[in-house]
Amino acid sequence: MPAGEPFRDYYAILGVAPTASLEEIRTAYRERAKRFHPDRAGPGVDPGRFRLLREAYEVLADSTERAAFDARLRARGRGGGERRGGSRRPSRGPAGTGRAGRRNRRALTILVLFPLGALLLGLWWSLARIDTLERQLRQATTLSVTATPADLDDGEPGGRAPAAADVGGAILFRPGATELDARGEEQLAVLLAQFARVLRSLASGADWHLLISARAGRAVAGDGLPPDVRKRTMARFESLAGRLLAAGIPPERIALRFVAGPYKAAVPVDGNRIELRLRCCGRRAGSQP
Image (cartoon, rainbow, N blue to C red; front, top):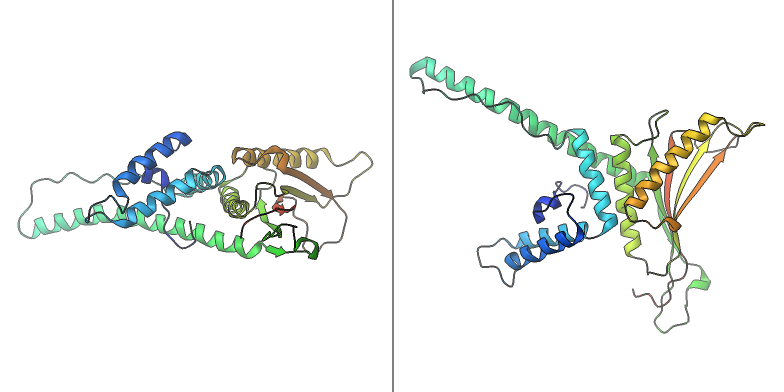
């Protein structure tokens, strides 16, 4: 979903539950596509409805895109963007007459509109916070594409060599924590969406991997790393690796790296910062532009 557009619940668009299987998603899409396809729908049907159906299916049918969307959906629920309910509307008694009746109706209107306004304000704040986070992550991440001279010709007519890609960013844990909080979930969701876009552009034979890396500012002592640092870092690695596996990343594509100080760095070491990067590529013989 492009930044700046309102959040769309793809499960609601297809009419399936968040726990629906891939086959259930496909069946729901086919049934609705028959009703809203421009070639079959009547003149009174909104053509944008079919485009939304197609967009929802493309996201939920892709395991990586779906995992990223589910993470955003969970993050919105934690941030208050998905709150339901609100103040219960007072029951309306017999309409009054005269000045007293007008005061009662005005008070009733305020009681109804104030909770609704507060709910809309909370929803707007949650969406603005997510969009701001996405822009910050895009500015903090890099995507470089280069080709070496040896890769300019793959030996096949019309062939095209792959480019080298390095894209990713940081995920921040709370001090001492080994599980992601709402902010970390949002950061992971944005990175998974970036990885999905890059992976779709690669051929099946491309040589790529996802690197989870951490740095410790404390030097290795005679007995190795301090037990608390080692244990906490390994737990964070395990948590992120599990999320990548759940998103459909093969285990052989996941790599870990842990560096312990002291060393010189342009940026001060943050022991709660985990880097997650997608690095590519090997050759893609005969790939199409």
